[in-house]
Image 1 (cartoon, rainbow, N blue to C red):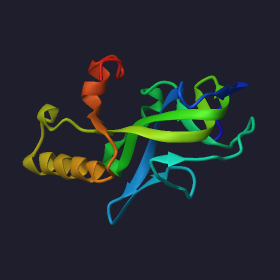
Image 2 (tube, one colour):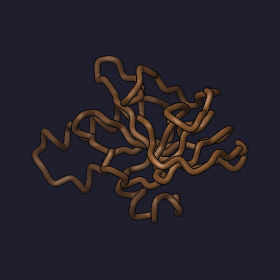
Image 3 (tube, rainbow, N blue to C red):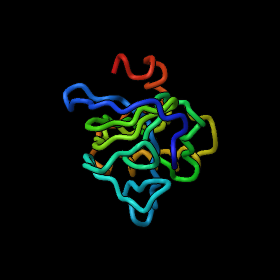
Image 4 (spheres, helix red, strand yellow):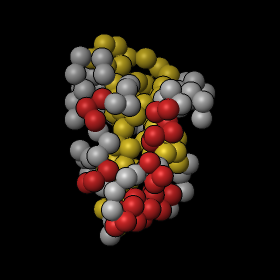
Length: 151
């Protein structure tokens, strides 16, 4: 996926990273965090990759609500990453040389109002997300905390 409206390159230090939001695809039979647009399996930290003005590097959006990318029904997992190294700044997001997964979003079961089967599905989904060994936060808590400022 090529992010539109390239603005500039910046060198971002690892100790002062850019915060980005992205989603991954998870296959229940083979639980790995896979890029949604490339044949790439994510680990907690990835990189380096070459970053140019077009379609290279690890991308993220600069707004956690952009394009409603958090579709839990199709086993898409959303989360927060830190990006650093050579970074291409775009109007709606970033492409970076390095990326590190900081948190994955889970679903707050107590907020769900549905059938017992769906509540059970949420529980299994959250269990799967926690199995990656990466810190998690309920998406609802994240939004209520002004996008993670108090977490």
